[in-house]
Amino acid sequence: MSDDLSIDQQIAALASELAASSALQIIKAVAPDSPACLPGPLAVDQSLPLADFLVVFSKNAISEIYDIDEEEKLGEGSFGKVSKGTHKALACERAIKAVPKKKVERSELESEIAIMKLMDHPNVVKLYEVFEDYVHIYLVMEICSGGELLERIVEEDCFTERQAAGVMQQVMGGLHYMHRRCVCHRDIKAENFLLCVPGKRWCPVEQCIIKIIDFGCAKRFQLGQKMYTSVGTPFYVSPQVLNGEYTQSCDLWSCGILTYILLCGYPPFWGDLNTELLPRIKEGHFSFPEEEWDVVSDDAKDIVCRLICMDPEARLTAEQSMHHTWIKNMAPKASDRPLQAGTLQNMKAFRGQNNLKKAALHVIAQRLKEDEIQQLQEMFKSLDQDRDGTITMKELTDGIDRLNVAGLPENMKELMMEMDVDGSGSIDYTEFLAATLDQKQYQQEKVC
Image (cartoon, rainbow, N blue to C red; front, side):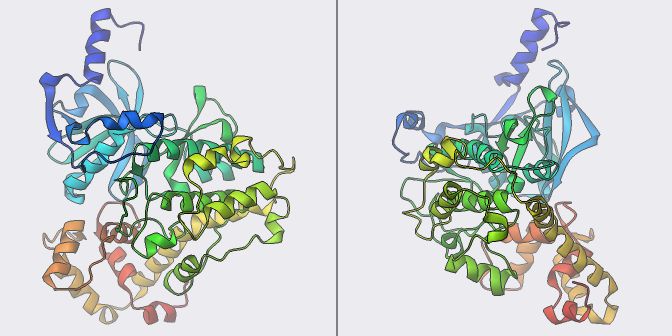
């Protein structure tokens, strides 16, 4: 807090941070009853009935409290962009996510906010305030200036097994906290970890503070209760999620995939989504190719095998993972040599391959003749009810209902996000073409 502020000004600023009740609209969060929680000392915190939890929306315009730097984007996703903001009274920086209200279901966003407000851990991103105007809902969060986990790693001259263990120690710490509070993330992947750099100075990646972000797929659970919605990211998803019945152990499978990627630069399961990748995940067979894994310790291979375990009951929990010697003692049997030189190159290739494939499909879509895509044009126009040239999530689901299409997937939101290549929050015409092209059409184009 600035020393130039008077005591009264500082108190007023703190009151703003605490969201004084006279300036609030209180909305009940969409959340289940208080779940039966994992045993242990932290379970005492769970005795508070979740139904009493409130999500706070400030009536103040966000511009009254924060200066938002529209020029400096911290990130942009399918349902909102993130900009840097500075609190006018406290002079502290925040990350401000602006979510267009027409692009997202309000109940889903309120549920996400409710979960984020429960989180208070060094390795979980902190939500401070929520604002709302006629167009957007704004989530004010702590700022993570160190970038994405994999982006930061590939910038290193070298990366060691001990550094990987340090990363996973923080990841497991945050996940253990979440599971003790009966929250399953359901989309653990490298892109959902950001770094905070202590003191805004450069430091090795394992000395940065790693933050779990993006609670759009997260769900409260009861101990022993199954979940059934198919969510997640293909490379990281567990066989149980693919089969439509799973528990919070799905997060640990994803952590095993992440550990594997950190140690060799690519995931254990690979291939075309439907014909190769998903069947291989369901079978669960993977290996440690000698070229990359020859320098990796047996402890590392052991924890990978115990996380990427087909039996969810035998799979390590987050707490058990924290006590595994590779994480607890920071890879004590690792050699001092860096991981193979190709590992960082593999990471770069893995990080970029999804966007490259989508871009290739865009090239194909732009080259098709009008008569080849006439049916798709008519379908796009039918779905675009407000004729603004884009398809929103609501328009997509309403259109499918109108066409009486059976078997609408529960993860339609995730499928739409996959179509939304430019991260605008809606599906543009070329994105729609690229996502709906007949397999034979784009194979003939010889582009990808």
